[in-house]
Structure formats: C-alpha cells, structure tokens
Image (cartoon, rainbow, N blue to C red; front, side, top):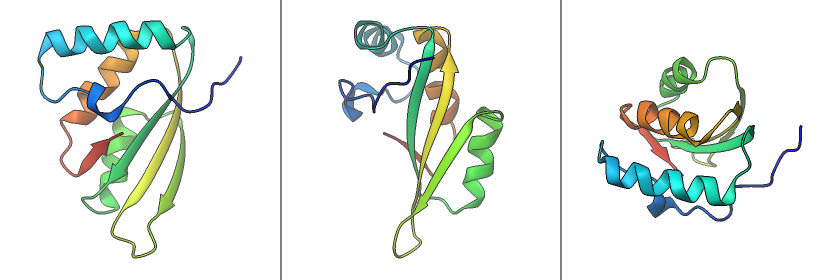
Length: 107
C-alpha cells in the first residue's frame, strides 16, 4: 500500500462549510483528480475547543492512526489522521461528520 505525502494539491479553501452539494461535488472532482483510490488519505485538523475534542474526532475516526502535536502554548492541538479509504465519497463523508463538531478546524 503506497502512502502519499501530504494532500498538496488541495487547498484549505477547497474544503466546504455546511452541506452545499455543489461545493462537495467540486471537492469530489478535485480529490479524484489528485488522489489515487483506494489508498491512504491524510486528514489534517486543528483542535481549538480543548483536548476533549480529540475524543469527538475519534468517534468519527475510531480505528485510524492519530498523530498529535500540541502548540507551544497548549492552546491548539494539530491532528494528522491516516485513513485507508475506498473512494472520494468516503473522504467527503469524514469531512461532513467532522464539520459538525465545534472546536475542530479542517485543514
């Protein structure tokens, strides 16, 4: 299973807010053009609502590898999650679920 570096061709602005299906269709098109599925996809998150939000994130991604890095001040925690996905729809489903959790920013 070949692992890619960071999702370098997808920008923060490509990740939609809310449930606008046109934006998700655009994201799906971009994912399919730059990622190879099935494969490992790397999700990046910033936890701003306290460390207890990490548990909320783990409810969405319970069996996946988490890499945590706290900021120097401890106000933020960056989370990298490696998840094996079958297609772009799985990636979008994760973004939609995490988007409903306050205190977690998607990168």
